[in-house]
Image (cartoon, rainbow, N blue to C red; front, side, top):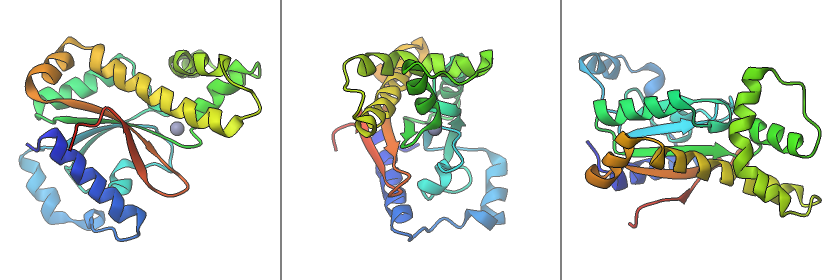
Length: 208
Ligand SMILES: [Zn+2]
């Protein structure tokens, strides 16, 4: 299994190919690789990303079958089933890098900001459970901001939400804490730009 730093380098390289339109992954039809994976998988990174249709993890990192263990949920929030999914991949497959990946123009973050601004859209209890998980990390930002600086607020809110999810994974699970302390598991935070296609790893990256 790749160590966290090596896994991160591989993701950075894949995203560089993607953002410069030089993708290499031939996974759209790769029966040989599919057949190999029947014997088992060894995904080198876990990606906790948003469900947004514009942010498909394998594509933006130019990876193929068996490479990434991907968890997608609106707003890349962390609830018990997301923690459990990361625990599963890290303990079962030995994956040592976890990336929480938010993105610009995230609808879940926008909905949360709208609610904080007093314009809540009608939400079901289930949808509210997502907004409620985004809310604490952006609430303090919102209180200390000029309300007319909407772009900067949105940018900071996306990153605050990523940091919050990454921290939750680092500290909300005894198993993951042990893997971090003893076995080199690393949780990093990143933001994908819809505008440029570039992933910026901005939180918790190991020294290279
Ligand atoms: Zn989103």
